[in-house]
Length: 247
Image (cartoon, rainbow, N blue to C red; front, side):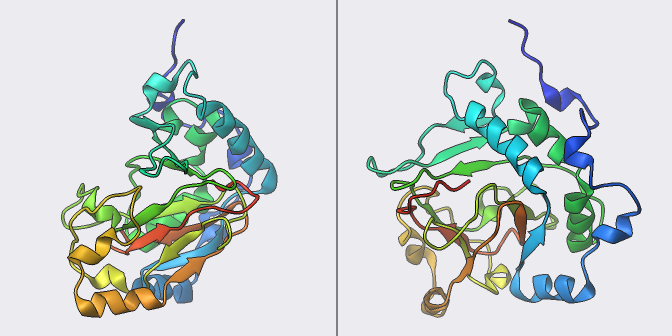
């Protein structure tokens, strides 16, 4: 069976993930207040990227990609059907969906994403990689507190960011993303684990830094909304014990 690597296609394959992209780029731009908020706090949340029908395309693709026996899974850079260190919980984690699924591939050209990313980076956008995290209902695992830059020291000086798009309504109950506002001003931290102990990061923090964990910011999003964050911003997400999946 011939496997088609979509990363070799340097333009959108279809139109549905781009259908809101007609007209000038100005309609997608963030306000100066939003940009200033990002610079001050290290994140910007509640940014609408996708319509419900576009989300549904990605959800359908995700349900196929999560199957370890999927014919094209060898194209993933990483694939973990369960990366959780707790045997009683599940955390699906994979990198490289854009090489396999047309919707995830075409998402990279959506100007609701690229225009805003360019503003926050104050320059052109170059794609590094995509990433999927999924937590099933009742026993979804944690993503431990970390800085992305601890793992992705690809730009020096630092010049990248993360855009996380919710494919389900994301709430405190189902383990939404949480930020330590202002921590993007901290120095680089050592890696303390991604899918295990939420408290592991304490071993590399000062007492002053630990006190900031008393007031984390829970980023609750509707499906199709996104949150942008600085690569040094400390973030994580707790377990999903709710009746709803989260991706």
